Image (cartoon, rainbow, N blue to C red; front, side):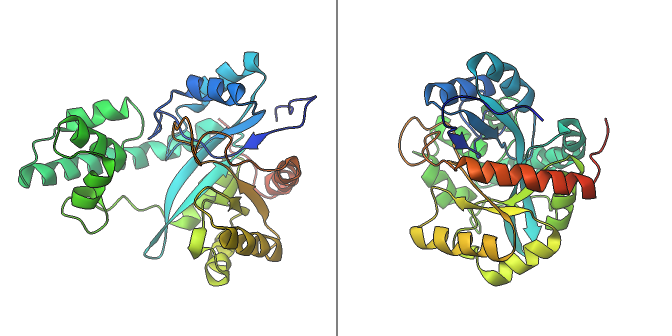
Length: 289
């Protein structure tokens, strides 16, 4: 495991995205932004892909920033979608292999959305959508951007409210990855499975199910959490002997509540991650390349 930055107090943001998924900054630009913001530890957690991790880690060394290898998986808990952060991945290649087929399913879904839009009189192309993804894992935000670029909607919000949101005319279900399978993928890659942005869903019954599935922790601090959410989730994390986490959920914003570093976690939380990692890796050996 890489050593932590020494000297000044650590400034830590453990949730961010790049152009490897639906962010607007490259992995290199992500690290440069982190350094400019005075952050010392950041996690790159792109949706269903680790393709940006190597670039981010290569850029981090000269800038004195530690990049925590991560991913954000979309998984299913019954009928509900849950997002899991995989943090501190020791074997990025192991999870990359497993995610490849799942990622192909995202491309198939994008093609189905485009086909549906075409049938509804919106002549957007799959090529335009994939161009918005720029080689990263494709998702609805890329379809939305293609719709804006083509002039069929005025902004991303309209794209989702009119066409792409749940229950809207061009909505297509994602390929399913069950929560237990997502946790297993993360653990076999040597990481911690963290429930991302629980929000109002972060209540005891849901925690009980996800703890039974093997999660290691939950995001307490997130820009989408109210003070009440944060207090309730923090208490449940302690009750279930989990580790707390948090971050800005940055997608490239240069200001506002989701700018990189707008939400930080204390170094003590990172210490708890390290302790949990030691315990987890004794229980589940990291898959070798």
